[in-house]
Length: 345
Image (tube, rainbow, N blue to C red; front, side, top):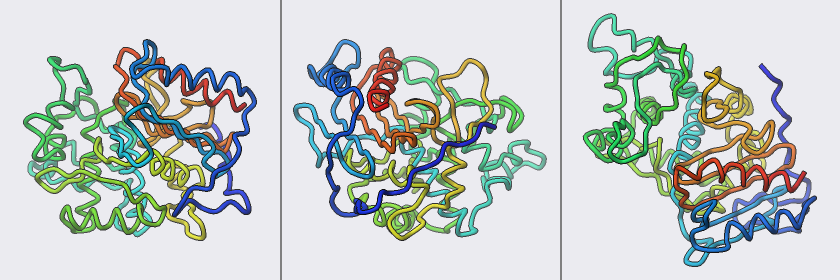
């Protein structure tokens, strides 16, 4: 395992943005390059290389140093998380691990896997779910008309009970032996979290707000629940770009916020510790966070159609990008984000 990069502390004299963000000057090595990248993204409502870019927020040294919105969008608008919600689910799980309510290395509390004696799925742990290594069969395809478990789960037969739909999938591989990105696993985790608390949807949302959102000032957050009362932690937690930046800053600061350790430091380290993966993959993955998008040591919450919250420890930088980028252009957006970060190096 490679050594994790050091996480920067909040600079002395910089207020935590629990209320308003402190603004500051942009300290960038290649100002002309950064300007060109931003102009490329916002040159038109829909650009040839990147598709639509709706919002860009950059936080440097704990200060808001750059903010840009396209026509029709702004700082008070909430943006879709899509799979950035998976990283929110990671945070909620960490709170319960710290409370002693969950053990990620114990078999997950999934009733569907305990109805038949000897069901091999009963051995699946939360760690394996968080690392996308459960072994469950799940087709993660976003193209309409294709076979797709994620579309069926979110919008088809599974939408009333997303965790049940995911938990009903058979094993394709022995647990812990094969990495495969699957949104269904996150909804199983979200239901496990609520079961650990013994609460319904209203109770779980109250927990989210009391323990995570309110302490860091993430007050715009709108989590969505299915008809069964499960937080759809794979995909649906809307928030402003500034609030997604607050969430990114929480992780960049090792789970600390002002005088409180909101998340255990080792839980943040767990998120950014790489999971063994096949050679052919979309990118490096930790535990419900992607790795190395904006250079070695960076880690990010990535969402469908180009939603990103990226923490870059060596630059003390948080970068949030929202938009609507077709799948065919997703690699271009990733390269653009990496270039934006590199302009600060």
